[in-house]
Image (cartoon, rainbow, N blue to C red; front, top):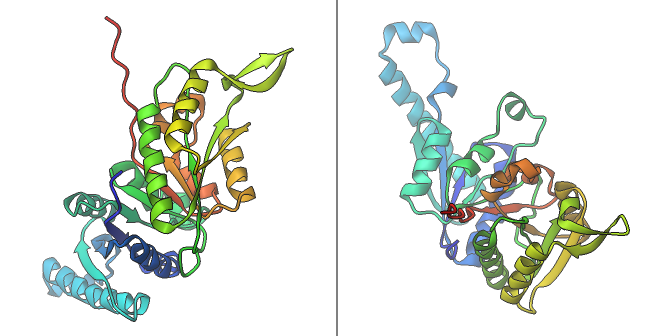
Length: 301
């Protein structure tokens, strides 16, 4: 992931976006990044009567409602950022498609999109917009279900979670995720912890009992990551259920931000690696997911 210079903040007038706005503004300022606020007006959400449709062309109705929404959006931006409103853009269309296209066209490094709490109507009916955005964009994605403070902590504790697997190479992906976490820790003046949760199959057995000696293949990957991270980072090994142990670690160590890889969880899906959206749902702090696909191994001749 390159240095974060451009941040996109899609808003939908929800409470989650209102609460996250001061934090996102401070994050952009701390990183020296340009912030753009985006709202996508979905015509499906427009309401008008059948009588109005009988006396006016549909396009004219949609244009008027879009203009009304634009005024509401501008007022919303002024309320979110009363001192100096950032660049703000409104588009019309399907929210997911417009956010994905605008992220790519604008070459944004980070999309900050708060997650709606599980149990709300929109998450019960379908996968959340934030989860869908994570599936579609190559930019890093910041998300959280929980309320955040008005500013980034002075010396944030950043936890970088890396995945390793026997017989597979996630090394290039891990290095990219680690580089993103190190860059954030440096820019924000924070401290960095690296954690790997070992499942039972990644540990060797001693007298029929699991021990903390990991598989040699994984151990080699761990050593190389530690060499790259250097002495500035703290390193931790946890064992047990991967997602539960990761969430517990973040809670115990009072992390301010969890950095994870986004694509390689799916690559190891048969090993029950958690999906990035599920980590966002369960983590007690914001999660920054980095798109870092594993390098495919060449087929044997």
